[in-house]
Amino acid sequence: MATRLQPTARKSALLDAALVVAQRDGYDHMTREAIAAQYQVSPGLVSHHLGTMPQLRRAVMRAAVARGVLGIIARGLSLKDPQALRAPDDLKRKAAKLIAS
Figure (cartoon, rainbow, N blue to C red):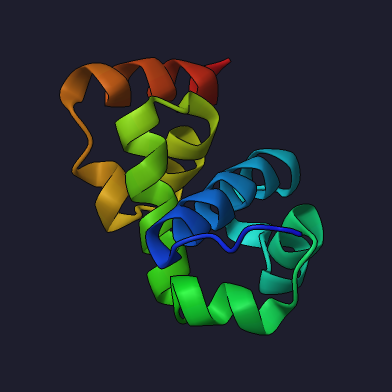
């Protein structure tokens, strides 16, 4: 019998899937459907745990900054994403090098 994940664990796992999708498809091209397919759940479950697309994007960028995922941060900087712009200066410099390459 499968064990049921606690809401915080489910949200964390969905966020992990969202980071994979953001890296693969591009931060500005990720969709609920792609995240749901990555995690093998319904898009409604993604919405339930991660909220609207603006809330989802904010959570993904915060996670990317916290984990130092430079590709996502770089795309956020180029889009002037508020969360990316608040990243520590060293991360922004490293991400900017990706944009310049």
